[in-house]
Each structure stands twice: as C-alpha cells, then as structure tokens.
Amino acid sequence: MKIIVIGGGMAGMSAAWTLRESDHEVVILEKNEDAGGRCRAFKWNGMYLQRGAEGFIGSEENLVELATALGIYDTLPRTEFLESRPRYHVLLKDKGIVSFDDFDILEAIKSDVIPVKEKLALGKVVPRMLKQMAACDPRDPVTAAKFDDQNACEYFRAHSPKFVDYFLDPCLSLFCGYGEDDYSLAWLLWLVASRLTWGAEHWWAFEERGVGQLTRSLGEHFVRDEGTQLNFHVIAQQLRVLESHIEVDVNRHGAVETITADAAVIAVPGTLVLNLFPGIDEERRQFFEGVSYSGHHNAWYLLDEPLRDDLPERVLLPTVDGYRVVADVAFSPGGEGRTLVYAQWKNWGSKETQAWSSDAVLEDGWKEVTRAFPQIRDAIIVDQYIQRNDLAIARRPKGYLKALKRFRDLGPLERVTFAGDYLVNSTVGQAHWSGMRAAKELLGVRDA
Image 1 (spheres, rainbow, N blue to C red):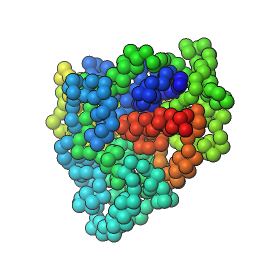
Image 2 (cartoon, rainbow, N blue to C red):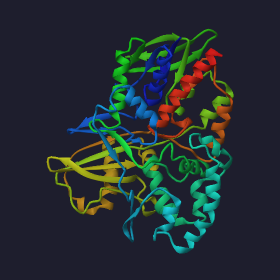
Image 3 (cartoon, one colour):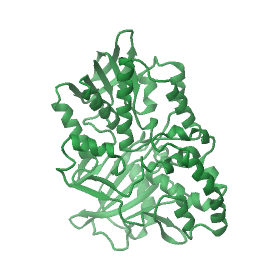
Image 4 (tube, rainbow, N blue to C red):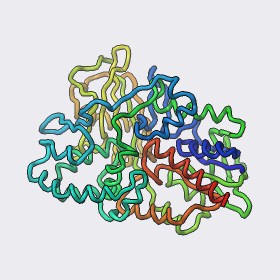
C-alpha cells in the first residue's frame, strides 16, 4: 500500500517506521523545515537547545530500541540526568526554597510544608487512592475512566490546600504547564500509577543535540530510505476518504496539489484534526471537539556575568504566590563566563500572552524571574530567545478519559487512523508508541 502520514513529529515518524517495517510505501508531510515536532533541537549561542521535550524517560524502552535500530544508542555519547535527589525544589515566600524527594503524595505528607491537620486529612485518602491506582493499567489511561468525574485540584484542595498550592500545582506546571482546570482526578491517579510510562530513576538524552538527536537521525534515515518520501514545508489542508483510496490537498510552497494514496495516518495535534478531515463521522467529531491543549513555552536568557553561587540549579514557582506566568527557572553556565537562565511558561501565561510579540512575552517572563531572584535584576541580557508552543501538551480535564474511552470503543476506520499525545500520555515515548499503534491498527483493518 501507499500510505500518507500527515505530521512529521515523533508520532508520525513512528507510524512511518512501523509501516516501512511491513514494506509499505510511505509519504510523510511535514509543515516545518525538519522532522521531530517538539522533539527537536536547535543551535543558539553555541549550545543545543530543545524545542519542547528535555529528555527521554528511562522506563520507555521503545525509544532505546529505536535508537539502537538507528545505530546511535551505543555509538553516540549520552547524558543521564534526574538521578540525584532531592528532585523538586519549590520557592515558598515564607520558607525560602523547600525540597521534595519525589512526585508522590506520601513524600508530600512527610514535608513540614503541609500542616499536621492537612497531613491527617491526606493520610485518610491514601488507601482509597492506592486502591484506585491498583485498578489502572499503567500503559492505558482509559482504565482510570470510571474516576473521571472530578477535578484533581478541587478534590485535593478539600483535604489539603497546601498540598495543592506547593506540591501538586508546581509539579504539574513543571511537567505540562497545567493549571488547576487542566487535569482530572482520574488522569492524575493514572499518571501516578503509571510509572512505567513516565516515572523512572533516570532520564537520558544524547550529549550534543539532546532529544533532538533521535529525531534528527530518524529524519536522516527516511531521507535515505527509497520507500519513504519525506516532505518538508508541505501543509496538508484537507483529507477526503473515497471508496477505493484517499486524497489529501496540500500546499507546497504556495501551490496547491492533490496527493492520492490507499490510506493515511493523521499525526497532528488533536485540535487540528477536524479542519483537516471535515468528513469525519459525528461520533468521532464529538471527541475531537473536546480536545484542547495547554501552552508551554521555553525561554532562554543569556546573561553577561558568571553563574552566581547563590542561584539554585532549578526551582518551581507556585501560582498561589503570584507566579502565574513562569512555571520554573533553571540556572546553568552559559559558556565564556556567562549565565544561562531557562524558564518554562504555564498554560495561563501562554494563553494570556498569545497575541503578544515574542519580545513582549520574554519581558513579561523576566519580570517574574527577577521577582523570584532579585539578585539578577540588574544583570545585562546579551541575548534571549523563546520557543512558543501554543499547542504543547493535551489537557485532560474531568470527563476527558471517558470521552477517550468512547472514542477508542468505536474502533479504527478502514483508511484513516490517528496518532498523538492526546490518545495516551504526553511523553516522547508515548507519542512514539501511539504512532506504532496507529500503523498497526491501519494494517490490521486493511488485512482483516
């Protein structure tokens, strides 16, 4: 078969790889100048920076298998990180920086940040949480769907406001940019239970390009592969399913043309699916109408002074203390006696500044950085850059997992399948896994 893969991010390239393993012809359509989506790297002031994902979770062995197949896992230098503890440092107005060893409710209960009365209240809900978590398949979020009727922060705030303000909110802002309305209790329970899919004692990446080394190598593989056409700067505009084939209208450097194939994998953010595939049936349309994303920008400020001893390596900024824009700040040497300041944006900050220029967004973020660390307020910024990710990570508000279960229960279409983080979890390994599953679903339907 000839199969079009719309989207050259990790999910789309994973689908293409799986299809090529079965010797099908693949055409990849990617709107950017290179492959990888948010799993890409770019060079800035002599350093490789990431457009989204910072590392690969050690428990996601499918990425190790892919890197090994590409011949880069054992031949290129790698960096292991997130091995040392404590792992999470949170800035509290009245206590300075406090640390947690892990993203775990029991770890939070041990902290003196949580008042005794709230610790007792949290302790009473732990057995129920553990029971519900035990019912979850660590690789399948819809197994938690029966608990999907409550907002996670609302639930825990009723037991411990401090736990929400200084543990739950900062950690989810760090990982996802999420605010209080962005995730349900069911999804949080599954996330904590599914340490196979997100938690590990270590994360890793390649030394030079970080996570971008994997997608760069994967893109180079497809360029060499005679059975794959990897197209950049090509925008898929509309897909139509006909009786014997599919058609995709594309914009290639301003010229519109139509490509035909036997089937397609749609591997774009879920919010873009309906415009791309207007002929989708009503039941699936209802699911995609409920898909939404959090914004999660990455920003870098290069300071013309050496790294100060009184700056932490990384710290989370709680929303409750007025930090509504920046989720966390990290400090590291920037080379040539300079300091590199890295900041991630929360969903609220990304949405509120969507119409602003990048310079204005950077200025707004710097205000929060220097409010948290006034000792660098007078530092000279010699360069700055922001990677704006408006469609960064799929939100999982209450009701989402139930909707996802209904969507999955519909089964696959004959000529079209879907891949992306909105179908599983928002890690590189899960996006990769969703692409494999989409390709196998497509082949399974066609071969049935």
